[in-house]
Image (cartoon, rainbow, N blue to C red; front, side, top):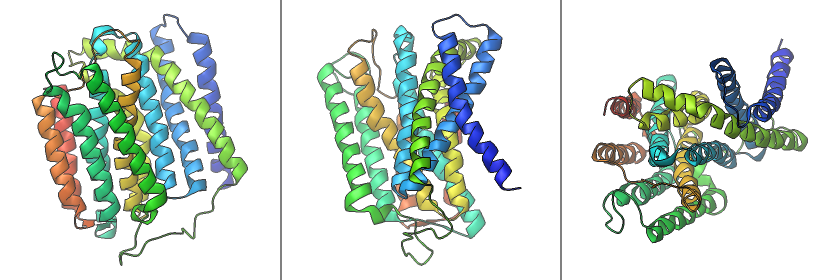
Length: 366
């Protein structure tokens, strides 16, 4: 009874990336009818889930907090590739795509994923417990990256509009890489224990007795399938992106909704992984996933689009509007108050989820 579903899952996550690459080869550069786009969308979503499954296998092999890092980077690679792919043929209408997608990722992770994880853990276990030192360091890095990359362009004067000049964009990209690199060093070398789950008595959990790590062969196989799945995701996204944009335009929605859809698609599997960790009372792992993804989204996307801007035509608008800056500031303040005690109740989870709902409502109806 147990072996059957597990074997089926292993086959599904192995076959899906292969199917995605085959469909990519058959449809690349062609005008696609609606039925084919629907099929590609289904395979695209399945490929995202397969990619994250294989990332989790690799993560299980290397352990925490390295596992959260693997998953966050895998998801962000998908996101960055989608952004650059859509910007290549987007022209002026894609000028704000990077900003919208990165900000959507920050709001989804820092409010949606964090709020849902805290709510699930506190309702199931009474209170959600985590390490405020590691979580606070991650939150400070996210706040700094978001301000430097998404807020400052609105107020700079070297370039017209909410854009960076070439020198400013290069500085923002370099700063993002440096801060992300410092965080990785802190996470994996200097203060690894700050990012490990803790017990209700505050003791660090360094070993999961019930968890059996996969073999090196299994982990390497999953690493290869992860790469294959990412190729399929990026290629298929390029095929379905015109339909997404046309659907958003036909519905009369703001073009920023495209960025929200991309971020929701990419982060959905990670949200599931975070909630599963919260149910097991491993809230620190959930927060590592959420804040690590927000950080990677900014720290890797900004340098990527800065490099891509060398050959991409059209402007690159990174500065947020006033409404989104208010939401970002409120998110940072609320998240800081949530992190300081090292434990949370359903109230804190509900506050973050209300902020996330406000973001979605204003994205649809600005």
